[in-house]
Image 1 (cartoon, rainbow, N blue to C red):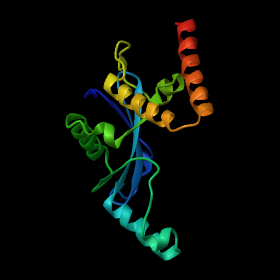
Image 2: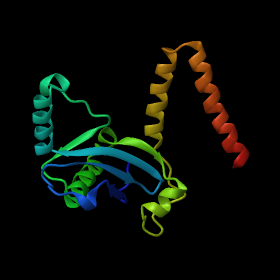
Image 3: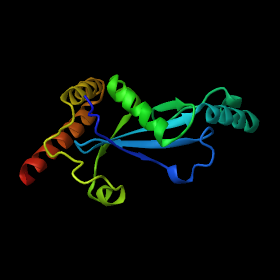
Length: 168
């Protein structure tokens, strides 16, 4: 589903002080121009957060913590370790479960994130099985939504396709 060719951007990579007590967001881009995001936390960082929460009384005295996106827990935050984990997830087909789709690469991303020359493949498209899976999830949600919501969403989707066809 995912290619081995990838570009990895690690948030705050340049100013990490303690590689064993840190967390970073990681964005992986593929030649089909899709971006995927996950958060990497070290085991020590999770323990430090738990201690802080228990001292401050937040989150039921450290009894729980909720992440806003998938997390991957590692022993240390380093480019080598992150690349190793990502490559293994791609190879073992676990990537799609631990990274969220983060959208398509935008024009401003091309300049700001320094993609290698000829990285993107105009003929490469998002894996159809991923799109089909999420389309079926959307269909199930629409079945549980009000008529007004269904109409609004379907008009938005159909309008998007009409606009794309008009400009294509």
